Length: 65
View 1 (cartoon, one colour):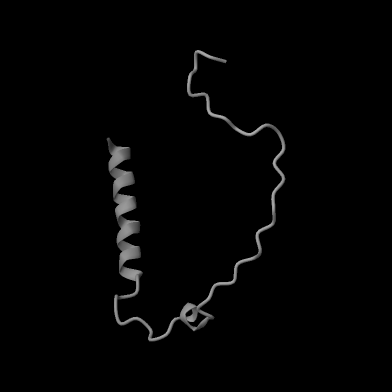
View 2: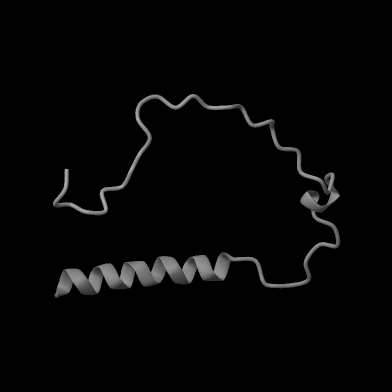
């Protein structure tokens, strides 16, 4: 019971300290770096993939193998 209380107090102290050090909620910056980027995302071309082996077929009836 003493161990549980000690761990609880330590975790509470760490959480309280982090809550105090967190920056206060305020006005967000006008323009974020991500917003300044090109609005169309650039994705790499998809490369065809070679499948090795038989295609997967789920066993819907376990009694039949």
